[in-house]
Image (tube, rainbow, N blue to C red):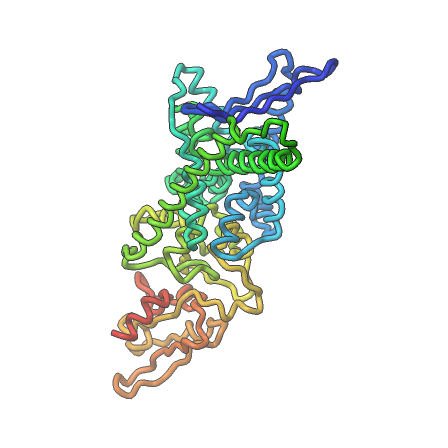
Length: 457
């Protein structure tokens, strides 16, 4: 089996801790990072940095600082795969995206350096792997699924549907900071992806990071392609400089074999993503689609593909109306953000959720544009309204920040009825939050698709 191999030779007088070799080869957990056993200081330093990053990220996710839009994008916003797919599929690129591109550039020259030094989920997975090996669990032989996953995600992004983007390790780890009670079942459900990755690493030591993780696979692809391209250019230059009497350079070797192998996986992944995009297009989603945060893509399938379930929008929401989807509406909607106007509404001057979305599932907008960013439309249920039974009310009109509700006398029913001006209403939910009727609200916000269907019917 051909392999990519890089080895650094220590110079005389330099500690052998500087000797490391990186190998990417055949089946099984074959990405091996090993150092000389006599240089434990290097390992201690690496683990100290990894644990410091892990503690820092966990502290950030559980602190009030995670509600600051300038910090809430972390750590998911640092993922090169999320930033790249968001830019391709949605055309969005945040300021922190430049740091993610810097990580990708370094990975092109230092194979999987982010996995070895910085990834918080990678640290947890390696601890799970060490524990699994300690209890005697073997490292299985698993195909390199990560290459197929990252190419399928990139191929889907070109079609506007970056499938499996939510498998990114930084997105999975970000879910740890969802605003849910730590002792509750919803919190455990919310971090199910994180638990799954660590569970796989324990039961199948090394498998998740080395064979499944799409971000790790992206780093391998960048490294292999960078080295393959540079060495090919060097050989082409030598061909141009070669004299007729000299032997022509050979275009073969393990580097070329590995480059061709990854390219084949890339073709299969991209073709699979394109096929999924077209075959799944006619499939029906849930009959009642949930309300999404402002700036969400109107196409529900595209929103579901772009959303990485990181929980950033939920953490920064000042009114706490963004909740994770945990109902039985299908696996595709699992842990996606939805709006609940039971106790509060979407403030007219707030655009935090769209600012901190790392993948483009929520399109950024300014505060001045907020009145034109439509979430849905308020719909009145006259059978529930207090005004239709001669009860004094009108609280929905007085609390509407957009002055989209007026009270009008209906001569047929001889009662006053609230009328919603759809041209003014963006679906902020203020009317629904203050409506006093229970258990059903007399006025509530519905998605545009449901409103149009009612108007046509």
